[in-house]
Image 1 (cartoon, rainbow, N blue to C red):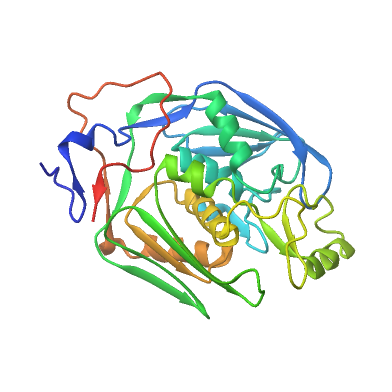
Image 2 (cartoon, rainbow, N blue to C red; image 1 turned 45 degrees about the vertical axis):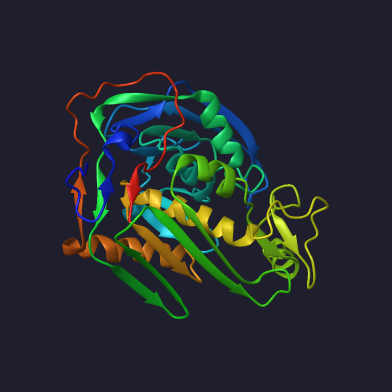
Length: 323
């Protein structure tokens, strides 16, 4: 049985598994860790939010507790990380936390941070995903809206490009670095919570020793260490435990891309492909996608005979979709 969604077939037996209702976290959570660039402790608390609030940051350390909306229109810098800003308030390194929200299907939350950047944790999204899982999720009395792609959209930027085409929700990412441990890596994964938690969330950010040393000399990356990043010299990785995956580098690029795509504010029903991407390319692509209104439409899952479930079930981004 097909549920009238152009280019996406939803099996009747599986349609009940798609996320019908918006979600927030069930209980507040708090964590303290260091900031990657400041090297100073940062405390972050996440609270439930009502439907249609989206994801919102609050700088509790600044007068008036200014808010910064997690939206692509609030991106003010994409150098080495994604930085959001609104008025005098900015917040850096938001992509790992946003990736965890996106990967677990959390649509609405209020995030209070007492510093200029989100805690770096271990350099991946896994600690955030674990905390969100412990907090649980709760359905809200408002349906989720999806952006359904029915025509290809592509953007090139130098050697890099990014596109989305109609089809099963999935992301393919390719990178190319002149390092013997990386070289050309390519990874493809379905966009659902199970694959995110297992295949993407644990992948750590990475950098090269000479680059890290230069950044530290410039007063940046003061909190960077082998505890929160993969560091490579000219031939190998310096971390004693080695890699978590052979393709950990490209998996982390997918993690970053999902965090940046969270700023769209809508989950995408389509197949994403990225080559030699960056935070800047991700944001440019979002702008291009939004501008091509004839390539997509908004879709709300059918609500008849649907009831909200308050108990926690790990929510998929998309489920039951086939090309």
